[in-house]
Length: 262
Length: 249
Image 1 (tube, rainbow over the protein chains, first blue to last red):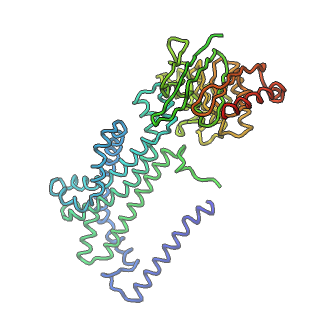
Image 2: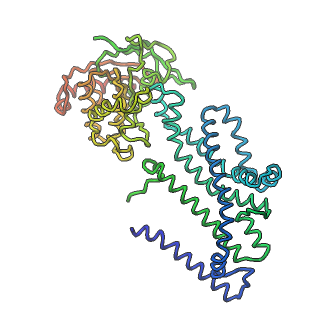
C-alpha cells in the first residue's frame, strides 16, 4: 500500500474517531437525556438491537431506489438518444424535462400518491422524477460532443445515421451518461425517502423513511440515528457501486478514471 | 501523365460573407505528390475539404477524371490524429472497412498488412492514450491507407509534432508512397517539408486563396538525408520561400 493510499484511509478515520469521542464527551459531561441526543454508544446499541427490523425497511426503500434508478437509466438514456436524432423533438420536449426537474418533489408527491393506487408504484414514480433528469441532460450533452473531425470522417466514409450513432455518438456519450447515472443513484435514494415521508403511511411494508418518522414521534432518538446511519451507508454504497461499474466500463480509455502518474 | 482531378476557377464563399478561395486552378496527376503551401488561414484546408466532399464549392468546377468521381477513391488525414479513444489501434484502423460493412475476420490480413507498413506491429491492442503523438499519427495514416485509396488527402498532418518525429514520418510517408503508388495532395505551411516530399509544390496566396505559383520539384527519388543538404534542395527552398513572400504581399 502506498503512502498516499494509507493516508486516504487513515486521515478520515482519525477525524471520525475524534468526532465520536467529542460527541460522547459532550453527551456524558452535560448529562444530555437520551431522547434529546443519544451518545454514540446508545446509537450503536440501537443499531445492534433494532438492526434486523430496520433492515427489512431498508430493503423496501432499496427496492424503490433500484427500480427508480433502473427506470431513470433506461428512459433517460432513450430520451437522450431520441433528442440526438431530432433537433425538433429536443427543442419541444427539453423544457418540460426541465420543469419536471425544478418542481420540488415534495410538492408533487401528494398528487402522485393520490392518483396512483399502488403504493410501490407511486413511490417509484416520485423517485424516478428526481433521478431521471441528470441522465437525460448529461447523455444529451455527451451525444452532441463527439469529435467534429471524427464526424467528418464518418461522413467521408458515407456512414449511415445508425452507424454514426452506434460507433461514434454512443461511445462518446458513455462517460457523460455514467456521470449522470452516478448523480442519479444518490438522487433516487433521496427521492424514495422524500416520497415515503410524504406518503407517511404504515401498513405491511414500510420503508426506512417512515421508520425515521415513527422513531421521531416516539422519541426513540437512538433508533432514529440508527436508521439515519443505515441510510447514509446505503447512499455511500450506491455511489461506490456505480463508480466501480463506471471504472469497469470506461477505465481503459477515459481520462476521468485513469489514475494520474507522478 | 494522366490526371486524377482538376479544378477550374474553384471558389468558396462562407455564409458570413468571407471569401476563402478565389478561383483555384490546379491539375493533380496520377501518382504525383503535390503539396499546397500557404500562410495560415489562406483557405488551403478549405480547398482540401472541398476535394474530399466535406464542403461544397460556391463557384468553379471540380472535375474527376474517373466517371465514378471520388467515390471510394479518397482518404483523409486530419491535422490531429482524430482517433476513437475507446478503440484499440486495430479497431481504429478497421473503422473505414467496418463502415463499408466488411467483417472483421475477412479483412484481418489487410489490417495486419497496413499496421506493419506504418511501423505499428506489436501495438495492435494499444489504446490511443498509450501512444506518442507520432505513433497516433501513424495510426491515422494506416486508417487512411486501409481502404487502398487512389488519392490521399493530408491536412498539415505533422504540424503538431516535434522536428525529429516529423522528419521520420516524412521519410516513412515518402517510402509508402513510392511502394504503393497512390496520389498525394498534401497541405502544409512548411516550405522545407513541401520541397522534400513533393514532385510539385503549389503556392497559395493569403485569403482569398489562389494558386500563385506551381513549381515542379526535379529532385530525384528516393530522397533521404543527403537530399536535404544538396544545393538543388536549397535552391528550391529559396525559390518557394520567395514565391510565398510574393504571395503574402
